[in-house]
Image (cartoon, rainbow, N blue to C red; front, side):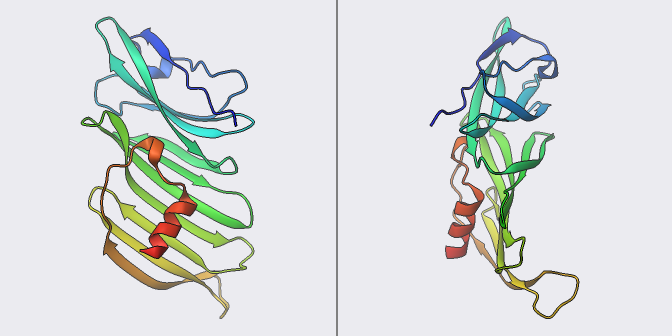
Length: 200
């Protein structure tokens, strides 16, 4: 499987919004967000791109030199069938929202923040939901704050009694989940995350 080739940029110290991404041939840019994630005063670049065989979220973190700025890439390989609903930098937090295609839907929100000790983007929060577009099965949702360890899961029951809502809330569980640093490249996919959270 051909993976996305990450561009390496060595550029003059100008805002990232003015920088062009030198994507490898065959890679298609889906969405881009610029902002200062590592707090060095230079905008960083986050973007989603795909080719025929894979898709990735890439963050180009600026590293100041004496004269130039070098952008160091980190990447997370994503589900090729998913589509982004949002990619944004809010303050120093990168937020990615995605939704899979098909009759069973996995939707997720991942939040990342720069960790100066590890010098990488770190996963700080994840929310995910699975449900059926055709109402063929129950659903499940989970949320995990990787800064505090607080986690919540909830069953989503098909609403067989009628009404406007397709699902109604089932049993909810709140608990502490062990916190370990998860870098951007190691963030779980929504399906794996939900399976782990269901098992507790």
